[in-house]
Image 1 (tube, rainbow, N blue to C red):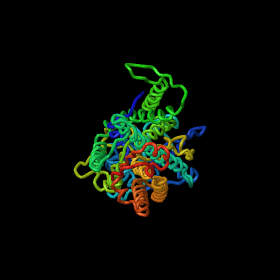
Image 2: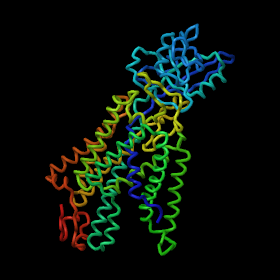
Image 3: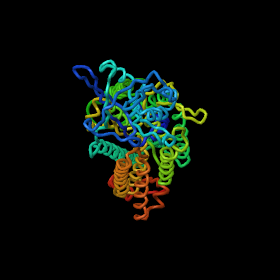
Image 4: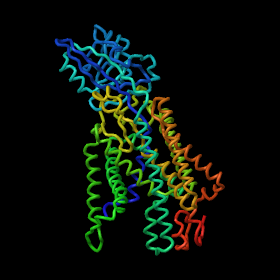
Length: 542
């Protein structure tokens, strides 16, 4: 019947979904001009830290400075400065030997206006423990080394540059897209989980024990002990990724490809089975396999393979990643089962602490003052070492500096046209965990509605609460202008809402412990499927 996602693989793949907060890059444009006739100019991409230095928003307001090539000099001591000094220049230096903030300090003392670090691999946001370099005020930005070489070849040796960061639109439409994806995924996943619960309850009225065992395999139940073990494994994996990123990133890519292809198959197969036509099948070793599902298997595998091959193609690969990611989240929400509200509180509470710790607490622990979560979100492209009390940037680059964790919904900022033509397409990110974890609570609310016949009050309320939490996350993101751990806002909104509904309906004890209903009278059940627990002879086991 085509590939089916093994529960163990899905649980393992779920570990990768709690790594990235909602975040975005900080791009700027380096406008370079030559001195020849005719006058040539060209734009290049650079990344800078807007929290350190402000840039003008238009080319007209940018200051023109001379570009000076110091890539043959480490610029790690004042003696590396040329005799004529660096007054009113933008200095281009190589990555490595000493920390780029130390290079910036020396360049500033020599009169430079900006320090441009030429990197051989990909760009990343300038970051580090700037508290040790509070006297550094000049602009620090990262550029591609290949762009600098192109600059010299195209424009000559006498180059002037202007640096500016185009204004962002007042409203980021990518937030609307991410909002719709996130809310619709948790709503559909929760509803699907309720349909499975309804089918299981129907099967309990007439199915044999073997059939019930087959039906119940649709769920992979998380007990409170399993939840605690899962969170511990998440923490261990986060630390391992931080130290062994360049190897484990490929393991994660492989797991994502396999798990997402199987998830996409499960989602599409559920739709195809509803179509009455095209049900021809072939028999192999006594098993009947529908031909259309065989073709579907090939399609899902092909989508995952195409994404794996072209995953670093910024212009369109994000579409495949989002399709696979949505299917992955849907499949896990409908498959993983939290048996009661107690398990929901433990899981969401622990992962909230996990999210906050790795975003807000780890900057006080790491060598460079960056949170582990943010480091993994951008990709740890640098190898920092402590040497005699000084932070040293090692010159060696990881073997896979351009690889990113495929555990996010990515939506490009299509409104940034002025930056897109020179920079990698800026994107907004939302981690899978920020969809799956609240989605598991919403799925439990939907199953509880089915079990108690409560007219979807828990389900609808929790979906609305998730939507409110997502909007709150966006508001804080805009106000703080930095990546946010979305669970910090999603968990309280969903848990408090579900608790208030249960309390007002005087069902908190039943909601907390969970209920397992066995409907004994199938004929009565069939006559009232909309309210299955209020008809027929029933045995209620809390």
